[in-house]
Image (cartoon, rainbow, N blue to C red; front, side, top):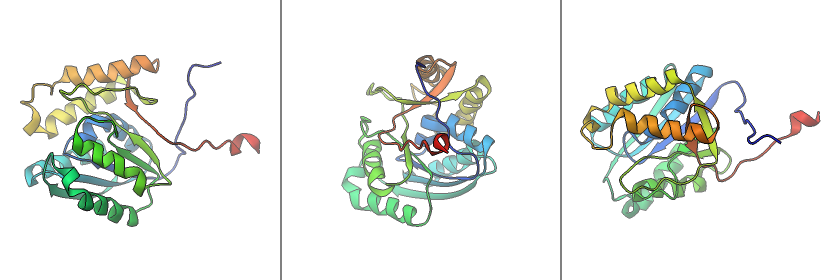
Length: 220
């Protein structure tokens, strides 16, 4: 029996919702996956951030354009207070519902519900109450809290994609370069570790809580 089964998203256009509590969450957590998607198919994206000032929003707009070249991107950029999203539950929930009403999401990328940061955690907890029919992939973000857990799905990345992800992060999020944990080694190490787990060189890891298996093609 094989150790792992390869899953794939059907070919053709895909509509994606990218959710982040803060500018750079999405790109750190799943930038390689976005590069891979954008290079393989037509992508329409609703890109949602809950916090950030205008300079940070500009970094995010620039980064999303680089990570999703050729994609049609609609930005929803809020300026709710960093670190206080649980106190703004209604606004976060309403924002997600407003986005959901305006799009058909095939794939939703969001933080993990067991993330140690309260802002990440709230977005993750609400996403499944809003998008009930989409595939939701929860990405991981490194931090001082040391909250990395197990993942159950992987997106394999080649060397060129890993290098491009790191280059775009450093080029677009200049405001974050002085953070002690922000460096090439951090990002590459995470991708290498997840690659070991799925028997490839590099990978981004995700937690998927619910997925529907369709065997119809095999039965016809």
